[in-house]
Amino acid sequence: MVPTSSPQGISELSRSGDPIDPSFATTLAHGLDVLAAFRNSSGSLSNADLASHTGLSRPTVSRLTYTLAQLGYLKRDARGRFALGLGVLAAAYPVLSALKVRQLARPLMRDFAAYTGGTVSIAMPFGLDFIYVETLRTTDAVPHVPDVGFTGTLATTAVGRALMSLATPDEVQQYLQAVKSERPDELDHVEKRMLPDIESCHERGFAVSLGEWRREIFGVAAPLYRNEAGDRLSVNCGIPSFRFSAEQIERECGPRILGLARSIKSLVENS
Image 1 (cartoon, one colour):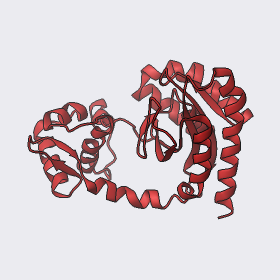
Image 2 (cartoon, rainbow, N blue to C red):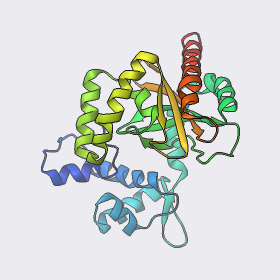
Image 3 (tube, helix red, strand yellow):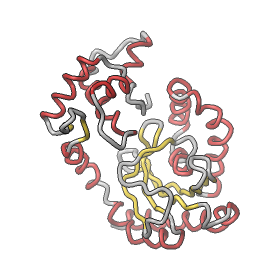
């Protein structure tokens, strides 16, 4: 089953009446739901905020935030509100350090970022979203400056199409079922725009998204590879729409990011 990308995943499953796996640690899942609630927040959250985000009761949230703060995964400010603590960063470090592609690809990514004036990133799937495991830019004069750990939807992005082009037919069907149950508002776009673009990516080796995700951003992406663990990786670039026309994105940037992907893959294979 495709992992849920919603911080309310376990709560939704419980309310639906579906049987819960007896081996599934519900309390642990609730604690991770609390941490996931910070993904879409740029500031601190109160227990009441977290209860609203997760669908959990206030007493449950209070116990979870106390425990997570004691362990260093949350920190509490003078107002009693919570933010992510350094324990989260420490837990993520082994994941990032194991991805050697990050170090190998940086010089090539820097060159591409200089060419486009955009932000070049390496992404992996994260439920119905993607997550950046590396990102690089040569200027801050862009409307959107994501960093490592940034997440966004697969449905409307070039990077989402590139990642899904590496999926097996069964994985595509699992993704569609998850969209239907978790994000039905995205289903029409997925069926009418995303699926045909995945097929196009198979044929020409790159995908584009011309302002679908954010009006001021043109996206172009190419699949990299699946590693031995079955993880999918792709490289993408978010380009300010004033720098290139839609035709230039298709004609120039697309083939160039395909070349970038091939060069990165070659570096990884020969390292």
